[in-house]
Structures are given as structure tokens and as C-alpha cells.
Length: 79
Image (cartoon, rainbow, N blue to C red; front, side, top):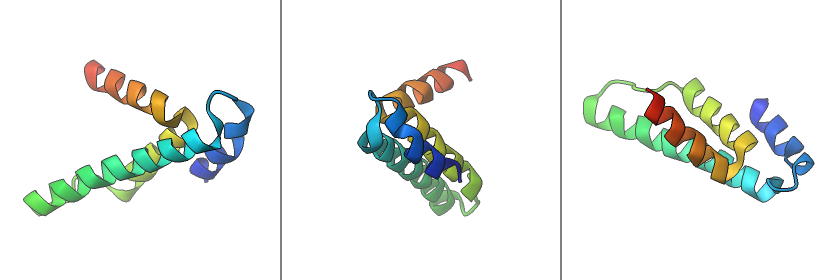
């Protein structure tokens, strides 16, 4: 739901556009799905649920590829 909304409304901000929104969604999903898969592969336990990965995909769709990395790095520094 939210990812689709982010992709549909990406045309409203000319700096983002649909291509950057798609890239951001793919990065949000791919990077964190990779983290979850690696963690489960090495530990045998689930580290991230499917909802976490979908939430980050939605975040990537709204923030686009450039802002997604900025937000993620800022969040990592604040923890």
C-alpha cells in the first residue's frame, strides 16, 4: 500500500521522479532483505521480519535513492 502510494506520488516532486523512487524502493528492499538473509543464514534465527523490509522499501519509495542513503546514515549515527 504505502510503497505504491510513494511511487504514484513521486511525480509531484520533480527532483525525485519515478525512476529515483523505483531505485529507492529497490534499494530499501534489497539492502535490508540481504541483511536479513545473511543474518538468518549465519545464525539460524530470523533477524528482521518481512514487515521491516517492506517498511524500508516504502521509505525508499518516498525518499528516493539519494535521500534514502542520507536518512539511513543519519539514523545509524543517532542510535
